[in-house]
Amino acid sequence: MTSSPTSSSSNSEVEQFLKTGDVEESVIREESAEAVVKDSGLDEFFRLRWYCLMVLMMAEFTAFTATASSKVMVFAGANPSVIGCGGVPIKGCHELAALKENITELANCVPELKYQFKSVQVEFNYVCEDAKKVKNTITIQTLGVLIGAAIFGQFSDTYGRRKALLISTLGNAIFNFISASSHNLVFFALWRTMAGVFTGGVTVVQMVFMVENIPRNHRMWIQNSITWSPNLILFPFVAWLCEDWRTMSKVIAAASMATFAAV
Image 1: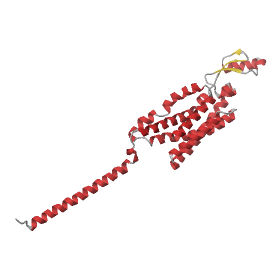
Image 2 (image 1 turned 30 degrees about the vertical axis):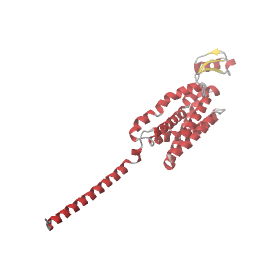
Image 3 (image 1 turned 90 degrees about the vertical axis):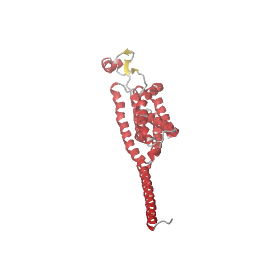
Image 4 (image 1 turned 45 degrees about the vertical axis):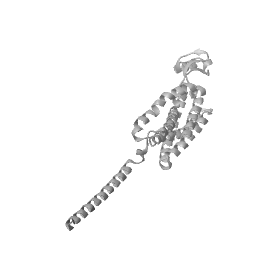
């Protein structure tokens, strides 16, 4: 039985329609896939795997270095208590001033100090009114941090986060180590300010570098776990072990070098 011309024509039209529909569906799928890739970016390819552990270890070293370097004067600039002068027991700076004013023989006596941490004030004998000179250096050091943050923020955008971290951690290690050898307050302030410039670089780059190398879905809890807050608990314990500001400066330099190696 032969098919009519009308039937053959209808079959051809159906086949042509199906082929056209398949092509259109294929094009739509390809366009959808391209749109998903464009919208997702590289962030969608990160997964919380073992390689992230190395990133997080580096982030902890960096967070501790930034915390310790910026909070070092909490301990290095701690005021001691005056408990005596020339063998005469006293309490506080007011009694020390009265003692030196009323007793001529004790006008040049060396104050006896009580302290938990051997700070710059203790070693260089900046007590009572003279302690303000040490506190004033904190302003200069903070200015160095602000300058470093501005410089390394732009540097990291232009040349990359890793390169900025490498330079800032190395510079921070060098100047913290040099500051441990300071023989007076002027040199201490100078080397601490130079270290502050690189501390600003570490501070401004470290969090961004970590966030960019971990999965998007895990960023919130990770950046709230590996940050300054836990290290503000750890750093006082480290300071207690160090006992004096020179040792603490060397420990911060060592932590900064560990960060340099981890980056």
